[in-house]
Image (cartoon, rainbow, N blue to C red; front, top):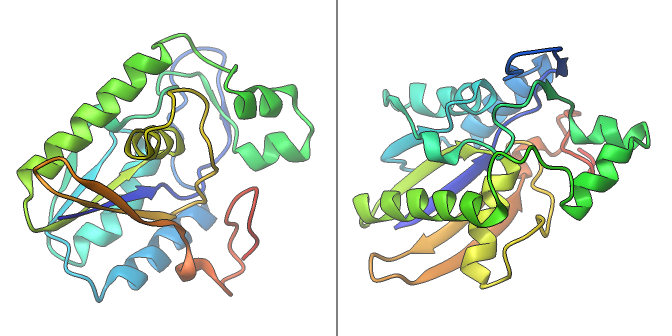
Length: 207
């Protein structure tokens, strides 16, 4: 089977004094999601899953709508800081030389909700269960940069810890997987759908 891990589009910035930020997609993020759905139109996708966070659900919806499929929520692929009271797009932190950007890159900015091992275990267990449930199919999972890093780290056999790369907005990461346990990374940071659109991609690439 083929597992498509998709990072959400660009969300709005949200900073609260209390409560959970859980931002929705920005205007640019909604456009990114539509371009993503256009790009995937030629591919058969049997099921669409998403994190419960709004930015992931909104990214998944155009893919599901075009196939008359539901978006099935998978709580275990929520981001590590799901309950944070603020969400600031990472490129804004970098542009402002915010110390939180360096902490994030070094893996020291944490909400202390889970240890890295606990986060990795819930991500790997949930995605492996989806692989088991969809033999011979292609499925899409709209999730988050930390989730994608955790699963690809697992597939590559790297130590659990800070993310080893930056997934761009609405980037696709393809994993060929068998029920016997074999995993092979096919693509990383697939973002052809954003080329030439003028939409933001992230901190590394330009559109």
